[in-house]
Amino acid sequence: MTTLIKLYGAPVSTCTARVMTCLHEKAVDFALVPVDLFSCEHKQPPFLAKNPFGQIPVLEDGDLTLFESRAMTAYVAEKFKEAGTDLIRHHDLKEAALVKVWIEVESQQFHPAIAPIVYEYFVAPIQGKSPDQGVIDANLEKLSKVLDVYEAKLSSAKYLAGDFYSLADLHHLPYTYYFMKTPCASIISERAHVKAWWEDISSRPAFNKVSEGMNFGEK
Amino acid sequence: MVVKVYGSVKAACPQRVLACLLEKGVEFEIVQVDLDEGEHKRPEFLLRQPFGQVPVIEDGDFKLFESRAIIRYYAAKYANQGPNLLGNTLEEKALVDQWLEVEAHNFNDLAFNLVLQLVILPRMGQRSDTALVHNLEQKLEAVLNIYEQRLSKSNYLAGDSFTLADLSHLPALRYLMNEAGMAHLVTQRKHVNAWWDKISSRPAWKKLASLAH
Image: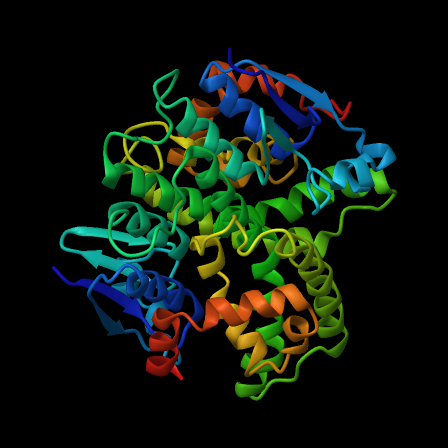
């Protein structure tokens, strides 16, 4: 009998959403164990034993405990490679490598530019701060340059790693979802291929199950 | 077929790839890209790597960029040759991935920005930001405390063998400990220091260090 995967996190959390979307794409049962961010549960000893970096999510599968959301999605996509959507192209080493390239692009190029913007609009206000326009502007400039590369790439293939949906596309979902609710959304919608790609990947049922929980109570 | 690696043997991200190729005994040829002259930002290079960064590899017709994707590809392609850098079971591979992610998201920005402030800006005749350096150093100390804890329980980051997770740290750590003058971050931590000694005395790394520096 296989154990039920436990995911420690919060429905509003981008990185938790990343892993949950992957689990849904693979039709894998799991239990979401809520971690109370507002009382800083993730920074205290019982949780630190699971992730010494004090971050959510954490995944437990039997004896295995993992942190880092992108390591979790890679694990789930590999363990359940024959089930649900093929997110990693495991039959073809070269396609698999191209998926890895664009996973790294999200991680190294896209994420560092979009994360501070999402932080300023969604997290700073919770801490009683106003969004820092300087940070937003500087990162919008970086993100625009990254999106220019995406626009060119997506004009020759439907998805980032080729004509197939993969983990590389999936990893973009949570931060972009929040970003589209900010005044900066136009940098996505004014690029025709990026816009079409976004509309496609964000309408997948697996993501819709997760995005329902992604709201801070704002309209 | 010899793998072409576009980059400079002195630059950290190409070194990540070269270290992996050397570990796996894969023949390569370095194609110099003149970073000081901005060659990597010119149209011809942007056709190879649209973000204008090194390294890029060309393996026959197959091209890849992003150093951490490249090392994952070669570690998988040559799984049966040289040391096993990925782990055997699914769980072992997951732990390698986890610590590769830690390097990318918890370690690299701090290390890179310290080297930028302490080594690169001065070389360009620019002043570094002392307050920022102090801040980065404190944060990196906190991260390395976690590494110290981890390495007190296992010989290497992902378990008992050297893997990509350890390899990925080599270039930035070498810069931190040498040109950046931050060796104390490592030498003051018993287990991190022992780990650094082990990983930096591997023949593949020593060969690369002698080519580069």
